[in-house]
Each structure stands twice: as structure tokens, then as C-alpha cells.
Image (cartoon, rainbow, N blue to C red; front, top):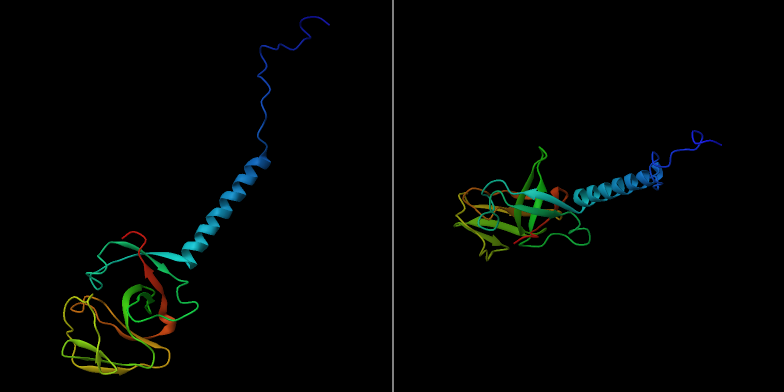
Length: 172
């Protein structure tokens, strides 16, 4: 064998382990799995909700980010004082406070809320109730919800199926 038949060792790159497409495939599968897991968690677990408007001031400020815990009411229903996210007929999500529970009589009179003829203590309320006196007896699957800033937001009775979950604040 002469010199021209020998491979030139200086011209050849050093032996490096080659990444096989299998390694890239495993990485891609893991990344897709994690992306899917995050999607499911934030769609069906904690859904991010941005507060728009003044209906829940002073408790929640316009523009703040909170989360809607969609699993909060799987084992028990909403309680008085809970701040819930509810689905409107046009697909929007409103944030309101539960003031009346199923079977109760909710009356609004003299700018106060009465539950079964007892005044409701609401230290979180801002504003006054601009409504004429009303009385609602809730059905077995109805809740009475209102905004904390009563001068701009009052909602009323709604069925349980429209309540999506409970609002939680991860960052106070």
C-alpha cells in the first residue's frame, strides 16, 4: 500500500457520538406530553382569569390576574361569600360573590340584602344598591350572586350549572 491509498487522518473529523433521530423523537414526545398536560391543567383545573371592570372593587381590581379553580365544587356546592366565575349566555366569564343559597329568600330593601329576613353582614361591599325593593325565593339549584361594588353591579339568581368554579388568588 502506498501513501496515496492511506486515508489522511488529519483531514477526517474526530469520532463523535452522533445524535440519532430517536433521541430527538423522545425529546419531542416529552415536550408534547408536557404541553398537553399544561393545557389540560389550565383548561380544566386552574383557568387564568383577568378582571375587567369595576364590579368587584375593592376586593378585586381592574386588570389583575387571578385563577378560576374549576375543581372547587366537584364535591360540594358554593358557599355564601365565595367569589365565583360564572358563564354568561354569550360565553363571557363574570366574577361575582355568592350571597344567597338554594332554598333561601333573598330580599333587597333599604340598600341592604336580607337572607330569610335577616340582614346580611357584608364588610366587603362598596357602593349602594340602586335597585327598587325586590324579593327572590331561590329554587333548589339556584344561587343569588352580586358584585361587591353594588353601585355598578348587581346580577341576581342563576342556576348552579352556570357557576364554573371558585376564584383563587395565587398572588395577593
